Length: 279
Image (cartoon, rainbow, N blue to C red; front, side, top):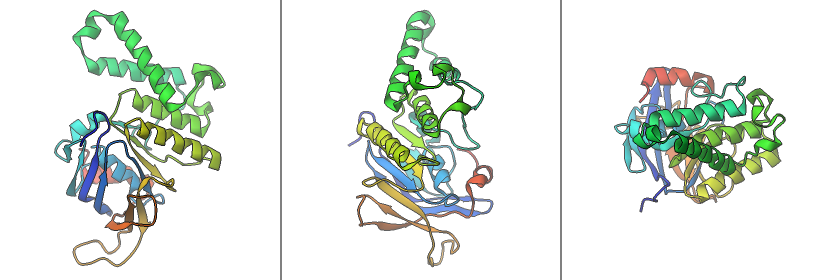
């Protein structure tokens, strides 16, 4: 049964082919609302493109998926509307010259602009108060205390620690009250302690009802995990050069095989997007 907030995510024979070959293929996935889904694999194994495809931002070449009952690729626009995307290189990176306050203000203004409600137009003071409340709630959910930053909210992104950047990007995504939160490189350049903090944060968001899809180098114990990057011989009709993956729905040692792979690197995400077309 669909959660009133979190979005169930499923995929069947899901694949995407770019100008350099298959980015991923044959992905099968079932994740109930409020799941923490880790897409684990080395850079270049198709993990980021899978994240973009499942959030309606890249058009698949094979199979289908559903997010919150919305079928991909046909309902890609609706899927984008219910999903929040953290920073992805070449897609929506944070501006290092902007301060934390500038990023938060810009996101709040965009929310008000695209909300377009009559109430906001007739009651601008109430709309500003609601925007402030949304910012505060998102910062609290992301665990980002502005008072602890070097220059508080006037701190530039370039002066933030990696974990603080991650928290800020998550807060910005949560301001849209998404049913699915997608995070790229969730554990990149983090110490063991910081990595544990990052996964506690994401698990807490999932426990609160929002489905979380996180790309990582190493999945945490207990997450529903899709692993990319292995290789094996494939039957006729598939790409024999494409890496394969396993999906583990228990967090233990009971994986069922799926194929998923990439002939691209993270640097080539834009190439894949160009070759397949944005949804």
